Length: 261
Image 1 (cartoon, rainbow, N blue to C red):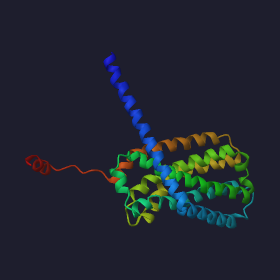
Image 2: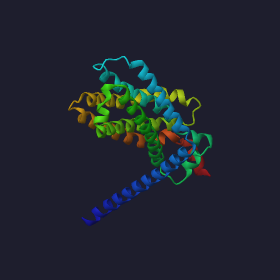
Image 3: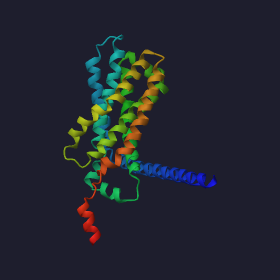
Image 4: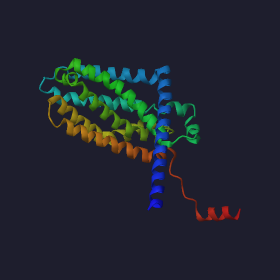
């Protein structure tokens, strides 16, 4: 019986060790990207300014809404802003690797491919959370119906975190697949919005229940969390084929010629 248990235990330890190595690599890559973003401030300033512009336009467009109608409009304002800023961020998340041709060097380095995915998703999430903070603060100041954001800050933080995480998990996968495409910005938007729609809908419904004080908020938040887990599991599984492509099988003639050599 011991011979059947020990190999499984050893395999579990190896899997745990590989997972820890992948997480450490992802953390180091993310810290490096965030350090460069903090030095250049290109993507951070662009996303923040875009969030302010969207917020001002929303405030001017919907300022005449009655208090009874605002709980129906504020969730859409919040997550439309996240969707627009997310598309802008994901369109440039691989810009540095593409311009300096460092993605190829990163792929041949002893780095787990899932670590690249997690690092880019984390950087995207940090930028989205910063822009969401600006949007939530602005909506709270502009619309009386958005006061529950300030009254329940922890619930609001959990909601924004879960919604932005799901968006970043799906978006990073397809941003990587289009990193070397010449028409990536247009094509990314075409692919991104339909695939992130389920997560945005869950976040939209959860936001409305938060503003209206429904007890079903925790249920919707749990569904959004399950969507996050599914998005990252599928994203980590598909990241390498999407990034580098699926290797084609060698034909029988090619294999025979290689054997003759």
